[in-house]
Image (cartoon, rainbow, N blue to C red; front, side):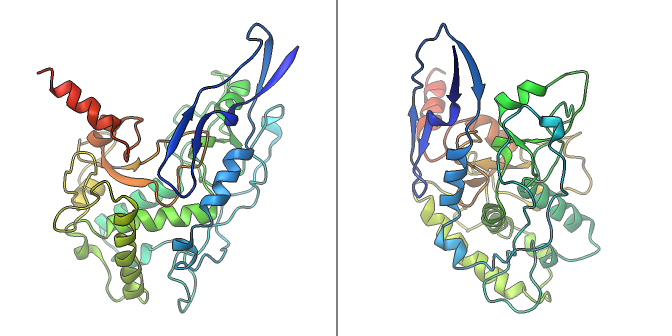
Length: 324
């Protein structure tokens, strides 16, 4: 007999408008039977749709669809796998303040000064962190640095069906790295709120940009909103600057973009990384507003897969220190 296991039906349940996560143990019967494992994406999609309804972002961002998005691709190479449905033709949305004048924009790149080595690297680092999946050098199935809106999405169990280590298919992106156009806009605004609050960033901002004042006003208000969302934690220094929320290291521009250093070849413990409150998972979308946090490379290693707003990771650290 064969059973289909709906993997998204257990392990985690999350309240969409709450920083609460409940772990649920799986209940499997007939463990001696032969199981056919397929992934059910319905709950993941359902959570995404709920998160998209956040009034904070819908009421303050333009959100008009743009023409920018990943290129269409064929699904022939993933025949036999269950892919996430309805992913074709996704386009970015405008992240400018609602009722803005002039043309729409997919990001705030124009807020930075042009023809500057540091700002070029800043823009690249910001956009890669939010809009692209992480590096995947072997590319057996998952693509390297693909758009989080890419059309073919596979859960881990589905990826294993077509993984062959002698062949680079580079045909899909991991479920735990995907997002939607609206959720990417949310995530981008959150991330830029941290970026514009880095000490020394004003040196690299173009105050003559047409939307500069409107964007700064939006991000200033959003900073206060985010502080309320994470009311049991500290997101900024006493002076209001961005910091690693785990180590409390105050971030500098060089932690994000150092034009004199290759961050991959010569990483520093203070390098800024994309941190998460709820860690990446295949049960619900994590690349969204209200879930991203600035963490240094060291801070990310310390917290691991723990939930930032829960006390478990701090209790673990206290337990370690108490032994010395």
